[in-house]
Image (cartoon, rainbow, N blue to C red; front, side, top):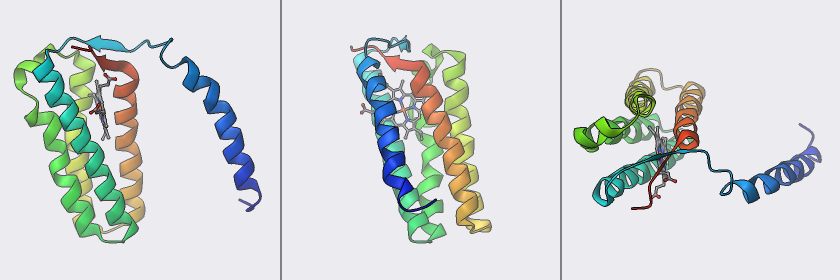
Length: 146
Ligand code: HEC
């Protein structure tokens, strides 16, 4: 891409995003999950752990240190799979459970491949695929306020 093209692309991007941001709340079609306050707190805490883990994985990629990538990825499958009580999980729609479970498998795979293949490009591709699942779930569900 020519250097001069970047600012133009960013501007186009902003112009496209701006009206979308304005309508996000009004057009919220996400399905509300009914959780009690404690369950909700656990879910959101696990989410923040996921976000923090992604940041650590990216730091590892940036430093070309695949050990950091592996160490950051390994525990990340666990939050959604095991730290959210089974009783809470059972309340969730099937699709939610499917996405949560597949996140677990994906992060295990990222950790394993980081150790054995030590290939940043491969890991970046895996990261993009797993983030598509973050997006898919966020697009479909929200939790009730309390
Ligand atoms: C199986 C479904 C699901 C998956 C997969 C998922 N999330 Fe979430 N996440 C949710 C729900 C539901 C909420 C609550 C959204 C709301 O009520 O607006 C949430 C909220 C969050 C929040 C806000 C936490 C807070 O304290 O308010 C963050 C950050 C987050 N998710 C990060 C991630 C990241 C990063 C990934 C992927 C690595 C991910 N999530 C994958 C369902 C999911």
